[in-house]
Length: 390
Image (cartoon, rainbow, N blue to C red; front, side, top):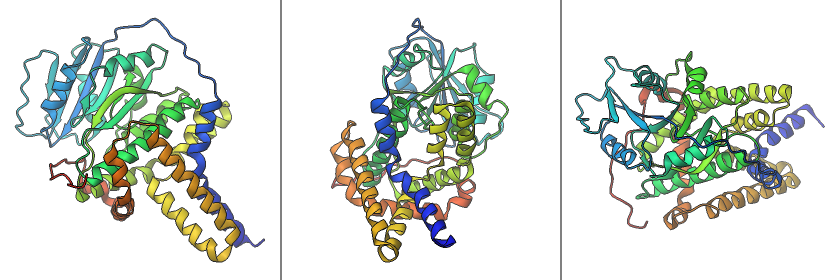
């Protein structure tokens, strides 16, 4: 075997394991016994942080949904960063509007601006995007996990809108990741990945993890989850703590958002190596498995790389090409299983035929990823005419 062929085999293994890793984690989750240790239930005091940058259009709706929670012990902190003279007048004394004097342009800066202006010391904080809506049982469902002794919890981000093909495909992607990187990864004994909103922590943990970090651009959740797991703390997944999230509806929005996310992966994926090293050193299954997941490229990248390997092997090594075919069959089966195991809207299934078009725009996002944070800081949502075929 030549050096070149050895390198080619190693490269294929590095790419190919991503096709089957979700199902491997699922099998681990199935055979792993569950252990739920409950502590005394509490009516914790929550700080609900709602951050907005430039756009404040959705804030009245999210505040209305929060005030409809079946829970009373909380305060809402709205950080309206660079929102101009947007009218944010609320009569409920639980709503506190903060307007930074200088532009923050950072999620974590906004969060710590709110923390420094807390009206009282809160036990826990939860982070909500300005375009989110909350299920009435959101805080109660989070409490179920905190009452089991967890100090970091990720809820489920469900689609608020399925009005276009792109919104449906965006929702399909979220269902896949919430199933495998949330529910199944947590059941397998590791930690759920953080999703940017719909997540909650004891206040001291959040301050300890990010208090000394100034994170600019997208990706604060990537740094935060690595900091939490590096302390060998498990991030729980609360699938009934539902946050309804605005999905991307048009191509410009999709490209800008995905280019920031891709930029974030290239910037922070190396955190997975340090977690794997800690997992081996500490004999920590939580750190080891979570580190492996962090190394995985965005979905469309490893699918395109896998397809490229398959194409080459058809001519170079037909026997190996059969393994790639098997890998794709397992991946597609796993993807469909995630959709079928979730409450998936029929419009999402109908949108799947447009996956190649969706991936094309993600390739465009990859080409623009290098300067993504210079072009846009946050996703801007615009109403567009729904697709008739959905």
